Image (cartoon, rainbow, N blue to C red):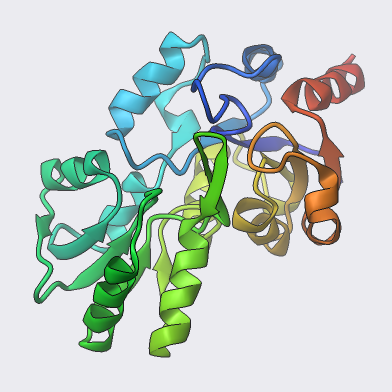
Length: 265
């Protein structure tokens, strides 16, 4: 089946995890898709900045895209959980974004426990999450990343934390970012605004996270490409998982871009 659309992860795929600067070939790849009228959407698990702020940053780095070609978890959260009382766990920037969006921080009787990424979670944090969930708060992840890369180290991602809390409490959880169905459904709708005939089986998802992004995308019928420019330093680390989650593995997006460019020539 011919490919019609592309969902492209941002962190670790288009920009590096350390300097947050464009990875070699990333700007050219996005520009090529635009110039050749391929439907595409940049899909990010960014929660530390307001959507408009992060879009502006990416454009300042040289990426060209319309507002309808961008999606992050904050844009999906409002539908699942309108502004209400939440016990939110994540970076100070994330908490500030929530406040600005009308959410009230409540660590006593919240409607939901919101989990985003942070490198210094403690056992006390996990214990507090467990107590709140056992007392009836919904458990919601801003995304479901497997690993969080920071300062040259790799920490448990939000997905790993959600699974731990769910196992400890016997409760289920929802996810608003990748690789949840609500998130990918919204991304597909954005692709369909560019080409109304696009279906999942005609979409390629490109990411550096085989568990947190690609397995969910593949389960929905998409083609998947794993890049080794982000969380995963070597294919040896994830050989078995990569076989399950990725149709192709490339060094970085420039290698994938060369394949697509040659195919379109």
